[in-house]
Length: 274
Image 1 (cartoon, rainbow, N blue to C red):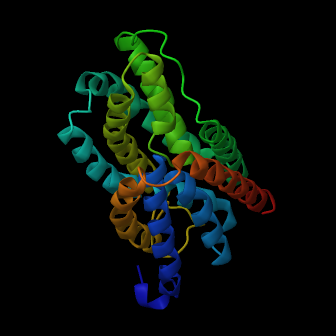
Image 2: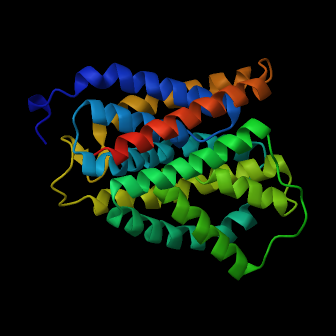
């Protein structure tokens, strides 16, 4: 890896700004940074002239790798407050590991335009839910071991395709199954770690040998973007969390939902025009 031969570091301020924005939004609004990181990284990579056939793959792989680190901080906080249900975690984890393998293989073989379309659909769904502040009504109990395994597989598979930690599916599922919301959020934070670890390995190994990778990459993980996004994201998440009780979060969610929809459309347009 010839770091001195590539002019990537002038983009570091953009990565730092993106990390700060993503971490702040995650802390303030309770969303996963992947919803911001993937479309904005895709745009940044496009402006740098990276190979178009792997734009979204590298954005998703880089986003998942950041979650490996950010989920640890979140997990420790929720565990200290007693909000992680480790029985549910153990029930979902085997399926999460299987789904990580499935999702990683699917992402590796999907075209950039297809991956972008999947992400756009996911973001549209999440943005609508955020704008409406929709929460499922508790109506049933958790399923048995096989049911939890199947749910874990589905959550992890989709998470690998969109570069997210899975909270957009795991929290509503647990709430629907009468798990208290704080416990559902805490358990989802714990689940983000194995989802991200498996995804990171899949995108690292899946990108080996690809001729369409940007420089300074490990598989589908772009190292300058990872380093630039990671530290400010970790630093700003607690700031957003502290401000959550002081700002009109419901209004901010609606504004942010509109912003996400614009990003999804832009990302899809970029992918389809290459």
